[in-house]
Length: 387
Image (cartoon, rainbow, N blue to C red; front, side, top):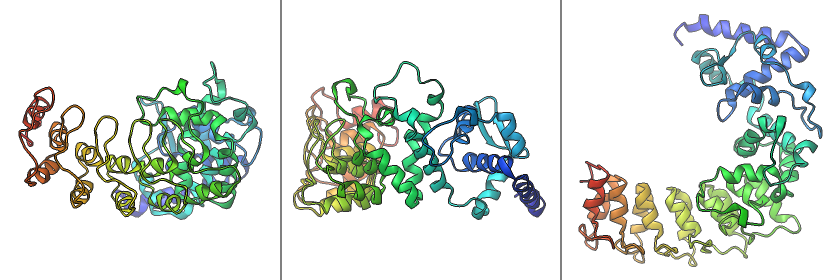
C-alpha cells in the first residue's frame, strides 16, 4: 500500500468503529462492506439495499427493512461510496480492497453467507409466488432477483454451509417452475434456443451441474423422482452442463451413475465432449475420452466435431489431446466444407494453426463450399499473424 502501515491502521481503526456502533448500524455497516467486497459484480444502490433487508431464513421479504443508501454510507463510516457514472456502489479506494484481501478473517465465511441470503430471498413467499414466465412487472422484487438467480450458485460453489445446502435443495426441488430459472436460462449462451417452445427451462439437477456444486447435485440424485436422464433447453443433459462449465468433479459423479450416457447428443447433435472441447475444459475432455462409449470425432448436425470447436476457440491443449487420438481426423470438413484449420485461421488462433499445419494430413489450401481457403478466411478477418 502507498501509505504503508499508516493507511492499514486507518482502515483497521475504521472497521473497529463500525463494529462498535452495535445493533443495526454495525450489522448494516459490516454487511454492506461484505457485499461490496465479495459480490460477483458491482451492485447497484437498490440491489445492495435489498440484499441488506433480507432476514436470513425468513419466508417473508419485508420491504420495510430496506435501508437507504445514505444510512449505509453512514454505517460504513465512509468506506463505501456510490459511483455516479456507473450507478454502482464501490469501496472508497482500491487500497481498501487490498486491506480486506490481506485480512480475510474480518468476515466469517462471506461466500457461504451471501449464498444463504440469496437462497433465502429466492425461497421467500413473494418470489415463489411468481411463475417461471416473465411477469409484466416485477416491481420491487426485480431489483435483487437477477443477482440471486445468476450468482447464488457461484458463491455456494466456493463455500457452502449445511444450512445453505438445505436452502439450495429446497429451491431446486421445484426449480423448473421457479422464476429464477427464467433469469438464469436467458443468460446462458444459447442464442438459438426458442424458450417459448419448451415446457421447462432448467431443472434442479441441471442447475446444480451448471454451477458445479457436487454435494447438492448428489443429494438431488438420491432424492426420489430425480433422474439424470432428464433434458432441458436444447435437449442437454446434466452431464452436458457440467462438461460445458468444466466441473470435473460433477462430471465424475454423474458418470458413476449407470444410467448416464456419456456420449448422448442434444437436439443439435452436440455431445458433452463437444461442449468441453469448445470451452477448453482440458480435465473434462480427458475424463470423457477415458470412456469407451465416447466418440472423439462425433459430428453434430452441422458436421462440427470436438476438434473443430476446440480449434475455433483456440483451445490449444484440447487440440493437442484430441490429435493424439488415432480416431480423430484433423482434416474432416463440416457440412459447409470448412476444416479445422479454416476455423482456427478465421479466428486468428495462431498456435492452433501451427499445430494443424504440422500434420501431413492437413491441406493448407483446402477450399470450403464457398471457395474460401483458410488463407482467404484469415485475410478477410485481418488475422495478420495467421496469414
